[in-house]
Length: 156
Length: 410
Image 1 (cartoon, one colour):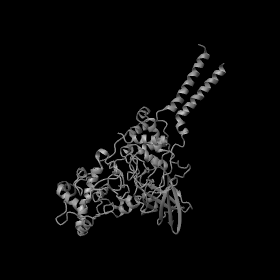
Image 2 (cartoon, chains in turn green, yellow):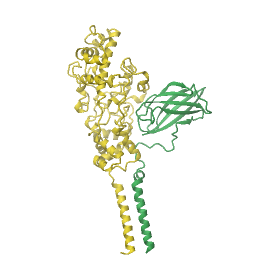
Image 3 (cartoon, one colour):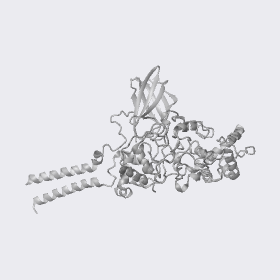
Image 4 (tube, rainbow over the protein chains, first blue to last red):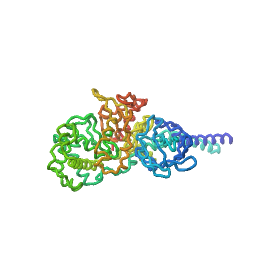
C-alpha cells in the first residue's frame, strides 16, 4: 500500500512538473518558427572586430549609434590594421552589403567620407530599413593588396 | 479518515492542480504566449517607441511657434492658388486624417497620385510617394507650382505674402525683398509664358523670390511638424503586453485581432517595410501594385531620384539651412539601378482603416483587395516586385484587417 501511494505521489509530482514546464516554456517550445521572417542562421560570427577573409587585415567597426536602430542613417568608424597590428593609413575602402535571406542590398550607398588617420576611417550613409540578418561588406585595398571582410548584424 | 485516504486525496489534489495549470497554459489571454521575438516586435511598433521629432537642420524655423502659426494660416488659405479655391487643406483635410479619400488628388485639375496623409510625415527623410523631395518644407513647395494642384507660380505667391502676410512674415524671416519690378506672375513652371517671365528676371531677383518661397515652405513645415499620430487601441494593448497585464490585454484585443498581430509581425512579413512605431520604414519598395487602368506603369522612385538631385530646394541647395554633413540621406541615396523602377514609399499604417482607397494611385478600394494582392503577389507592371506569395487564408487576411483596425482607433 505504502509503495503504491509513493508511486502515485511521484506521478503527481511529474505531472505537476510537466504542467509547470508547459506554462513557462510552452510558448517558445511549441512555436519555435514563430517569426515568418526567416530566422537568422545560428552560429553567425557577430563580432565587430575580425580578420579579413585572406587574413591580410584586422578590421573593427564602431557605429555612431549604440545600439544600431533601423531606419536611422548612421556613420561608422572603421579601424584597419595589418594582421600584425600596424595601422593601415592609406586604404581604399569599398562598402556594400544587404540581406542574404531577402536577396536585396543596402538601402543606401555608404562611402568613406574621411580618412581620420591612425588607421581610422569615417564611413557615412549606413542605413538598415528592415529587422533581420544584415551583412555589411568592406573591400579593403592597401599597398596593392585587397581583402574582404563581411560583418553580420541581426537587428530587431 | 485513514492515512491511505488522506494520501489519496493529496495525490488527487496534486493531479487537479496540474490539470488546471495545463488548461490555463492553453487559455491565457494573449500575453504570456508571445515569444520574446514577438514581444520585441510589438515594442518596436508601439507608439511609446516613437522618439521625439528630431530637429530639421535644413529648416532653421522648423520649431518656431510663430512660423508654425504663419504656416497654419498658409495651409488653409485658398488664395494660394490660380483659381482662389485650392489650399493645402483642400486635399489634406484635417477631419479626414489630412488626406482626401480619393484615388487621385484633385486641385485645379487631377493629379496622377493619391494624396498622402501629413500626420507623422515630419519623421520621413523622403516626401511624396517617389521621394522626389527630401524635407517637409521643400515638399510644401511642389504642389504650389503644380499646374493640376494649386496652379500658381512663385512670383505670384511672393506678391501674395507681401500683400497679406508681410507683418507676420517679416517678424519671423526679416524684411521682404523689393518687388516693384517683379512681374505678378513668373516661375520655372510648365506654362511657357511664366517660365519666360522667370528667365527674364535677374539672378538677384530670382534668388530673392526663391528665398521667400522657401520660407513659405519652412513656415508650412513648422505647422506640419505638429501633426503627429496619437495612441491607438493597439498601443494600449502593447503596453499591456509589455507590462504583462493579461487582464488589460484581454480586454483590448480580441482573438482575431491578436492573430492578426501575430501574422503582421510573423508569417505575413508586413514588418519588413511597415516597421517601427510609424508602421513604415519610409524607404522605397516595389510591391507589384498594378498600373492605373489605361495608364502606363508609374516608374516611381526611378524618377524621384533624378528630381530630388536637381531640386534647388533640396538639403544641399542654397535655401537649405543645413551643413553638408547633415544631408547624409541625400548624399548617400541610391541614385541608379534596376531596383528603383516601380518603387514607392510605404505609407504609415497608423489610421490606415480610415484611409481608403489604397496604394499610390488609389488602385485598391478596400483593405480586402490589398490583402488579396499581398497574398497573391502578382508580377510587377514595371520593375521587379519584392513580394513573394504569402499563402494566407481568407480567414488570416481577415485577421490582419482586424488588427489594422486596432491601429486606426483611438
